[in-house]
Length: 539
Image (tube, rainbow, N blue to C red; front, side):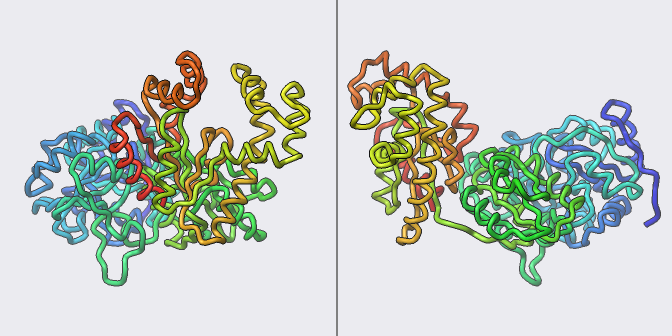
């Protein structure tokens, strides 16, 4: 295609107005959305849509998603709007959800790749909504990258692939989500997720009930299978160098990758695992191992950046697949063409505040066939058996050391309320506990264990979350926890409250854990929730 002068439009009313004019006239403009930048054209203009396919080099059997700014536009696109589509629209629009339903004749066959259905979404980005309104038509808008390349999350990413190929790019800054929308097919008996995104399986199930996940989410389509949504068939999101993904606990995947490294390799790792690769020049990070949102925002930029490095192959740490992690994991697996290596046993890390029910969940796990490791018990054993740890503690806390060893209760009283002392204690003990638990996990694997539950009050502070393939917090309302602590430990309610208030609040656990269980109901109800958690996250 012949080169055009690609305009750079500013994120203001004038820029949005110019973008709308170009689109109304049949042009192609890259616009920001909350997910990624989209390559927009009138969804009702075959010639304009053809320009999108040509600019991207996109295969004609890969359908496009249509973007709207108002529910009234649905009548142009879908034959009918069922109640469950309205339920999802009320819950998640504007937002990163695409719904697939039978299309009207007004939608050109090229938009739907010849299918009888079309995917539609209402983006949450205010500029995108403004541009759609100004264009006066629904917009077909696949990601604004060359086909197969990592999707663009900034205007600069767009221009790398599209400068001279499209009429304009509207610069709306970095995208907030960073991975494309969830695509859910509503044509069958049950909703079916064709592509995971920030609207998760759990969210859709809460709104509509039983929801299925298409096999194309976890494997490539076979010969002759037609894609029903973008990203289902072809290799996507791929840098130039081949990618291999290693799935498992972050500490295990980091150690495994470190053992495979050869000259010229690149590594994609978590921020908190970069220390494993301090001597490697081609290392890029895409967020903390526990922060799925950050991973989504940074993944595509990191994959693009590898093209500026002299890499012959890329070895990547895979993220946890729960909630929004399913979307990030899917994009990373597709960047590797599903060249994925699973590593290690399932390890469910259980944490939370005192008196919430961690031990109850752990006992249930053992009944269900899990091996269990109690970090507090490991710590107590090391106090008895590790001369190195006792020596280090005695040097820092001489008043709590005696001829019979370290007085654990006295040590706990010493550090309670003294943040500097507590940090010193953790700096000494955590490495010993970490090494011992890593050894026990490895030993359990050699003895045929199927899964492990790891009970660790300071799961994230100790770094033991990196030994886990999933993490779970057990929380309770404060007064329920106070009563359990008083009964269990024989202390006063005031002492129990002081202990709880010295521990992180609920937000800390909600922001870090894959699942949070609230133990505020009768024992039988909590055990039911705990059993479901163990079946889903521990296998």
